[in-house]
Image (tube, rainbow, N blue to C red; front, side, top):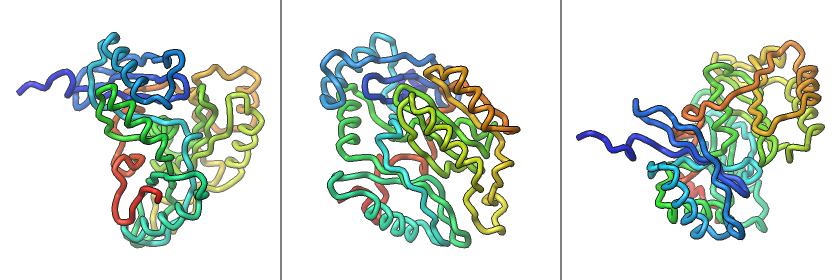
Amino acid sequence: MRATSRSRHVLGIAVGEKCLCVGQIGVAGALPAAAPVIFTFPPGISLDQPRELGLALRQFLAHHQLDARHAILGVPSRWLICKPVNIPPADTATAQELLWIQATATVPSDLGTFTFDYLGEPNLSEPRDLLLLGLGAVRREQLLGMASAANLKPLAIRSTAVALAQATIAHAPRAVIITAAAEGIDVLTQHNQRTTSLRHVGPITATQPLLAQLRRILLSAAPTISSTDPLAQPVPAQTWDAIVIWDEVGLSPALWSALESIAGGISLIRAKLDWAQAAHRPPKAAKLALTPPAPPPWRWR
């Protein structure tokens, strides 16, 4: 039976405080990606009213003839708790137990319930550097409530910045990635197809913290893992493939000049969003706990 248009597409939705960036992409050889459109929240409505926001989003999608019913929801990094964790040789279940201990020690009790997941894969014979990510339960329920009212079925909730970083893998597998958007500036590091760190620097005006963070990264070595794993070798600072910048806000020429000065001989690349590649359904390990694994319980109690 021939697939319907809905089954051949998925929505990529980058969520912000005041708007959503929505793109419909083709899957499994379907139609090409459509250009993203911006949904600005109606006056007086925010994620604090997920049902009302979702109903408005449903009308917006119908108006723009975006008929996909499955979606990937991307969230700003400042909504997340991000912590690099070095895990000794371990199977998946043991690694999750160790990560759970880290999670319980990371979140103050007054922040309430969190859902956690991680980026990276543990290994029985080698230590691994994983990235622990946590999203507050209130935010998660708001997102799922909005999606339900919009008649959408979320496939995953993930970091928008990580999605952009992973879109660079084919071109720069060992890179420093900077994302500059309305929600602020993030800096990530990526080694051999693994996102190893994520830091929210601040608002788009936080240029000095951005430059300081970039200097620290370039002067440090990559995470050290056993030399018997060639894909996990430490990467000296001078062997970065590139510094990739996703600039959605128009960084000033002076800031670009400062970034070039710090980069030295490392290529500085202004990236253009490949919507289909960045928003496509991530691998299982990259999902942000839409369905927490068990055991242990990956929903904060």
